[in-house]
Image 1: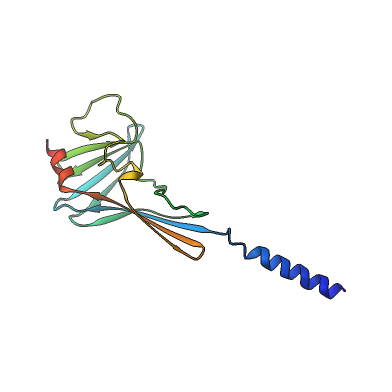
Image 2 (image 1 turned 90 degrees about the vertical axis):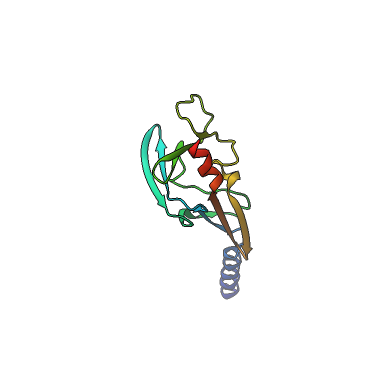
Length: 155
């Protein structure tokens, strides 16, 4: 009888270990420079410069590569490169600021508010693809810098 109880317990624990709710989402995000210009992206928190990323013409830079428990099927990722504001600098001289909140002051000439379709702080502006393979979800996000943004920066 003890053997049957031991076999039952081992089987029960094994079944619990195969729970299909053990899902994982793998999230990646890149900034892709689709222009013929050098780009620098300076990130700021509370007005203090945090980091600067350089992306050459037609280059890209990975800003997120992470895993999260559960199945995430919509645009989402966490990145230290997303902050309260980012200044994108084209060719070392033309700038445009991307804000993560509503702009309360217009102290800069060229900027995108958070709800702009060109703002890199807003997940909605990233091309999003998702693929589910068994219990894993693979989400990829791409933000494209474009010639149109370069022209906005030169105004």
